[in-house]
Image (tube, rainbow, N blue to C red; front, side):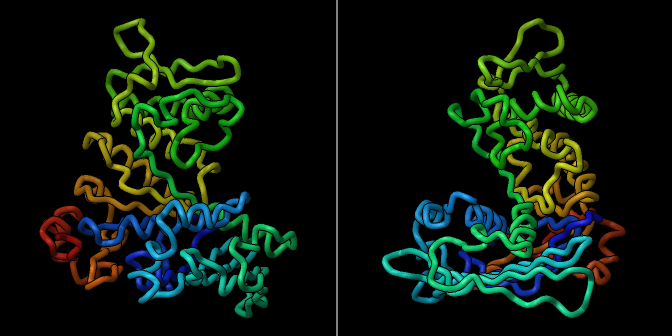
Length: 367
C-alpha cells in the first residue's frame, strides 16, 4: 500500500448523495450501478473538492458552471440546505483531516457555515485540536493559510485527483498543440498529453518505453510517437507500422486518443501518481482488449496509490475481485452505497466471474 492513503470520508447533501458516512476505501474501489444511480456523482464530489481548493479561488465560479447551488444540493435547497463533508488522510507522519459545511445562500450560491482542519503528528490515538477557518466566507480559507498544519493538510487534499478523458471532440485540447514547458504532470483532462509524453521521452526513457509497449498491445498498428518542439509547443504525433507517413492527434479516433491518455497516465513513473486516483468510465470507447490492458495497469497502480473507478463495463469488472466492488443503487431520491458480502457469495465465485455475478443481478447494481 502507498505511504499516503484516503482513510475515511463522509459526504452529505451533494447531488444524489443524501449521505455516505464513514466510508473506508480499499486499495481498489470499483463503483458499479445502473445509469443515474450516482456513480458519476460520487466521482463528481472529488472534482468539486479539487475545484474548491484551487489556488485561484474557483468555488463560486464552479458552482455557477454546475448550474448554481440549487442544482448541486441534494433534492434542491428546499430539502437540503448544505453540503457537509469530512475527509481523513493517513500518512507515514500522522493524520490530516478536513471538514466543511457549505450552506445555501441567496440568490443561488454556497457559503461556508463551517471549515475546519487539523494535523496530528505520529500515530497517537489522541488527535490534535481542530482549527477553525471561520464562517460566512465564499471561498475556502484553507488555501490562504501558511501554518504547517494548514499547508500539510492542503497538500494532501490536492493529491486526490480526478481524471476524465471523455472530451475527444475536434476542438478538444488533447488534439491541439500545448506548451512544451508544461509537461511535468498529466493534466486531469489530458490537454497536455503531447507535452507530457515529450518530457517522458527525454527525461524518463524507461517509462516512456513502457507506455509505448502497452500501446502496441492495444493498437497493433502503432509503432512509436514522433514528438518534437515547434516554437515552444508540442503536438501529439505518431508513426504506424508499414508506412513512413506521420500522423497527428487530429487524425486519431476517439478510442485511440483515450487509450493513449489512459495508458500514459497509468504506466508513468509510479512515484508521480496522485495519492488517490479517480477515473470515471475509463472503458468509454475502448476495445475489450484495451479494457483488459487498462484494468491490468489499474491493478498495478493500486500498489502505489488508491484507485476509484466508476464503470458500466462487464469486461472491466471481470478484471477485479468481489472485495473491490462498491454497488450503487437509487433508493427513492438518494443513492445508496454497499459492498457485496464476498464470504456469503463464495459459492457463486466457483462458477462465475465477478462481472457475471453482477450481470446476473446477484449483487444488485442492475437496472
